[in-house]
Image (cartoon, rainbow, N blue to C red; front, top):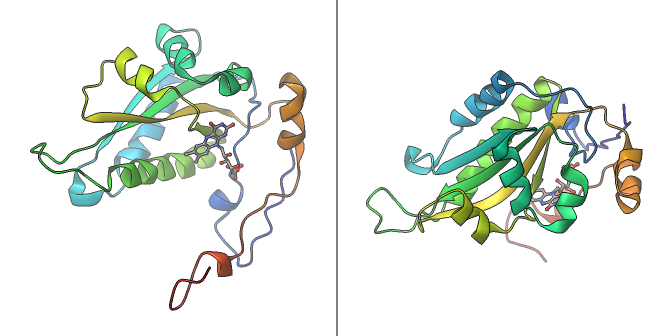
Length: 196
Ligand SMILES: Cc1cc2nc3c(=O)[nH]c(=O)nc-3n(C[C@H](O)[C@H](O)[C@H](O)COP(=O)(O)O)c2cc1C
């Protein structure tokens, strides 16, 4: 298993600390029940006005839906994602119930959904890798979303334990890099005014 070091400033929960986004996955398939378990975790995420604006398309490797999601991804992501046992797409409803007002927090809430999915996945030894690199206009048409929906992400799903050598050469270094990096808290959290 690829070793990763997460140098936290404070002790945090192992399910958060141990998550990372692999591009190489173990070959073991993901089952429909596992996908539905991940979706159930997402389902119970909070959302603004409980509007639950998230919409998810999912497909297991070897199915038509998987191939159609794959075809919507940008070339860079297609270059590494083919080993993933399952693919998802995350979309959100852009307006409120009555369609008159924009739901400004819809993308935020899709993020909360994926946060739940991500923690649940780690607890099951499942890894997810989210992708902004998707032709979102094509994807919206391909899967029949109306105009008031926006496709936001592709999501690769598999198990930890893949081998970096299966990846395109330029991505192997990133996959095997041991120490993960983040900004310091002082760069993004202020007990007072915003600081540059
Ligand atoms: C919304 C979102 C979009 C992302 N888009 C891509 C992408 O298109 N391709 C890719 O290889 N990784 C993508 N990533 C993965 C990030 O690069 C990764 O989460 C980040 O480098 C932190 O690494 P970690 O998840 O292993 O902690 C995306 C992640 C998120 C949350």
